[in-house]
Length: 263
Length: 298
Image (cartoon, rainbow over all chains, first blue to last red; front, side):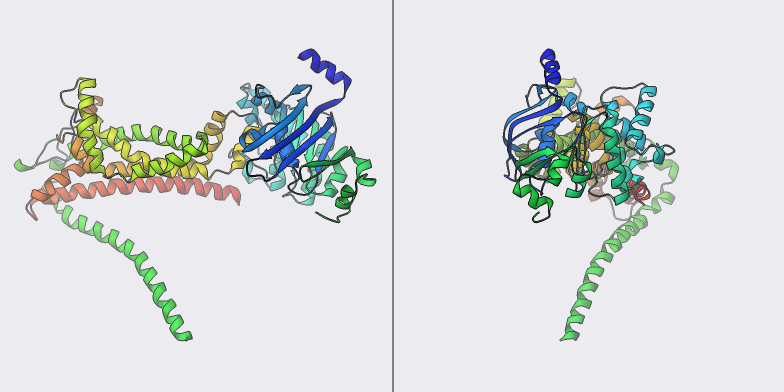
């Protein structure tokens, strides 16, 4: 198993391989239909398209958060470093530590900024104060919010502005030193300045992490994407390098959506 | 046309206002009545006699300490039974149970809450108390402990239904946030969901305890009604008599306006003050956490 994952990593620089993934919720709302794609390491991959296209569903498959939703059927595979994470036997808690997630609405837990950031580490059993302090500083710096909160780490996280809360949530995910970071419309409630800060942070973060982003708009997709995938009603319509896809889309539907003719 | 409409508005508003005020009026009247009938005791019997350890009204011993301690020990025992059980049940229903189970359990718990306490007392006399007598090898099964168990059963539905609502109101995003950080199911419950629902859970606990203190029928049936001072841990397994049971048992037999009559009202007053205290503590806990949240949000 270990050997195969090493071979896999050498063969492709692809961190994640999604193979023929299909999924349907019990209430029949959002679903995925036979999606296959490969996601590169140390890049920002953007999943975009109109609502109900399956972008969030795909994100939630990557850290198995869908386990908790009412899923009717699912098939296909997702390989991360060559290991199928949809296998019911894998350790979901370990997976979620390796694949961090930031949500659309910042959800600071009802505790202080510091406690929020070290929360995941504490759950994982880390007790040494020096380690925790180090993680707080490192991840808050990575999330580009250290300077704003370093003097009030013990204030309740909910007292921060929306943009700051979202970056604390990003830091919270980064504190676990994940390999992959999933972001589900992380800037949807933020003002342009905060949005800019988060986007800038992403460009720094991709040096260390593999980033998968569901953007809040086509414009944001265009600004941030190294690679971009266009989803429509559960199907992957087009997947290409960001600069190619946004300047010369191959598919008519992609072009129409980017040009704002529907959606 | 317009005039009759505004008149109707006026009447309806006043009616609603009146019913709102009447609640305050009734509480005030009850309190006033209790004071009027209870306070003369302080001069008739005197504080020192009231704080005696002997309750034997026929010979003018009016020490209320045995009754007070009886009520407290039974309620304390009930709280020890009901709080873990109630909060545990609420957590199970809201966080762990599959949907079909939840749909069965919730109405069942609410049904349990509507069970007349005399029926529960019946079960206590026929089943719980003989069982305890044999199982714990006691001279009698009618003890404070028996009362605690049954009162716990009475308080549980209240705690469950209020606490479950509070847990249910915790945004799903909180739980997902914790899961996404690699928290296990139990860690999410213990460290995120329960703290977030803290004030609601505490309200449920206080309401449940409040119900247990005021409960009369069940305790009268199963606690043995011996007015003995209950201050040791062992007293839990002896018969006791509570304040509520005393009032219910003796009020029918006293002469109107006698010393005994006034003392019973005095006991009622004490009971009233205790439940008032419980309510004030409960609401101040809630108020505090609200104030903190408001301060934080502003």
